[in-house]
Image (tube, rainbow, N blue to C red; front, side):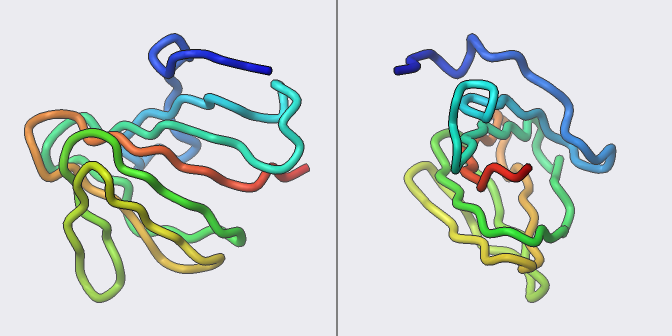
Amino acid sequence: MLKGHYTDVREDSPARADMQATIRWLIAGRDGAEHFAMRVIEVRQRGAKIPLHRHDYEHEIFVFAGRGELLETEGSRPLVPGDFVFVRANELHGFANAADEPFRFICVIPIRE
C-alpha cells in the first residue's frame, strides 16, 4: 500500500508549453498502479489557464482548492472546492484560475502503455 502527501511529490511542468500549470503525479505505473493514474494539477495565478485541448481517453476531475473555470467550446462554468467534472474522450476542455489563490484539482486518467 502507498500513502503520502501531495506536497511531498515533485512538481513538474506539463507536457505542453502553453499550459500555465504544474502537475504532480501522485500515483502512476511506477507505483504499481495498473489501471489509473492520479495527478494534482495547480494553476497558480489568476487568469492563468490550461487552454482548450482534448485527449482520446476520459478523465475525472475533483476540485479541492481555489476557484476556477471549466473552459468549454460554448464558454465557461465556475468551479469551486467540492465540484467534480467528467471529461469524455475527445471532448474539448480546459481550465482557468479565477481567483488570487492557487486553483488545485485532482485529475484521474487511465494508465496507457
